[in-house]
Image 1 (spheres, one colour):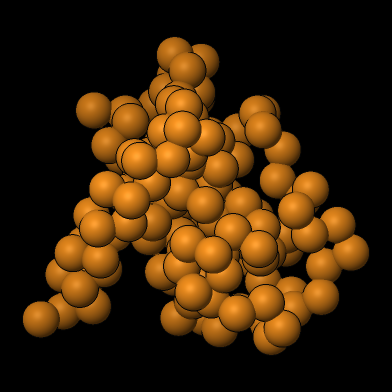
Image 2 (cartoon, rainbow, N blue to C red):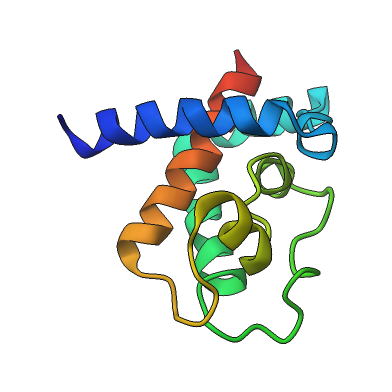
Length: 124
């Protein structure tokens, strides 16, 4: 089994659990968000996701943890709230990624995988 096949299986389980949350399940991309994705292309959106995660989520100690991800303004931000990848507290609660260390490159790849999988489902 490849890492992407493993992620696919685990992410589907995650999406099922998230669908049971009233808060998480209310997030959806708007037409404006979808148009933005189409205009930029999915590879640019993925680059944005990596950039946001590395700057706003990867450091171990964030001064504004829990408030670093806006609720609107970019499709990745919406996806982060929908997938509980918006702050270190949610990463711990939903993904079992502990707070007190810098995220590893593997963890960052996983988070971006989750975000992009959700975005691709929304765009279809």
